[in-house]
Image 1 (tube, rainbow over the protein chains, first blue to last red):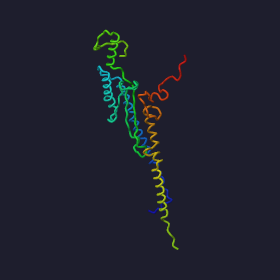
Image 2: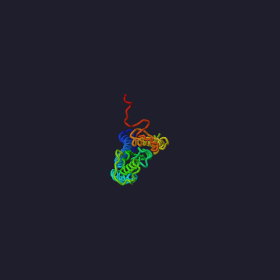
Image 3: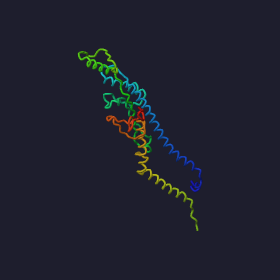
Image 4: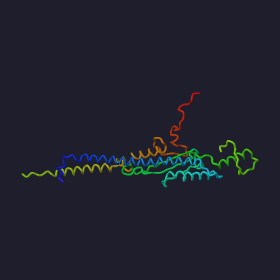
Amino acid sequence: MNIASLVGKKQGQSTIEFLATFGIAIIFLFIFIKFSLNVTKGYMIHFATFMASRAYMVADNFSQNPSSTDSNAAQIAQNDIFKKIVSDSSVSAEFISPDQATKKFFVGVVTSFSQKFAFSTGLGGDKVINFISESFLGRTIPYSECVLRSCAAIKGAVPSVNTNCNKNTTVYDNGC
Amino acid sequence: MKRVKSSGQSMVEYLLLMGVVITLVLTVLNSEAFKKLLGADSSVFDGFRKRIQYTYRHGVNGINENVNYGGGQHDTYYNGKTRFFVPGAEYPQ
């Protein structure tokens, strides 16, 4: 190749400029594509967490034990709601029951999952991004809680009544 | 006197210049400052990442990653001021 013959010619200039700028544009394009994929998955999990929290709030298996009712509600919300929306088996919702919550307004559902922040570690870093979805709708009073409260109310109001609370009883305006 | 040909001069200059340019580019790419700015431990993208994490979780701009459930603190609801809809001032009596 005669280099001297090429000096002074400009036919390749636009091609080189195009390749240089196109490379940078492609890099940023992939950063935003990855970002979009992350938040799209994130918002779907936000939705699944909220729906699971709704199910967890009201599910009741009518057992005699509030703790078993809570764990059953968590199971229903996880399997019948959350997993139906989120097919990724590595992502699971965690349920904070009234017994577990240190502050009672933090009763509900928390979902944590991690994603790579960028396709390439060279541009975008090699750290993962941790997404946390939360929905603290609480728990409504289950049937078993009503039984215990009604029983306690009857025993408190009429101590002479010797009952083991195995009859259906409604105490007026006790929230049940 | 025989004249020396100069047809290879531009090629030599081109190669030397390319060597200098490649050296400069590699020096910049391998420098600690560049790696901190845009490399694997990029401070720019790390700040971006933390801000997205916070915004995703709390629905408001910020960067704090510490939420203490036990202390009852949660930035989604209260971060120096409440995020619930409340009257700006008391109603007149």
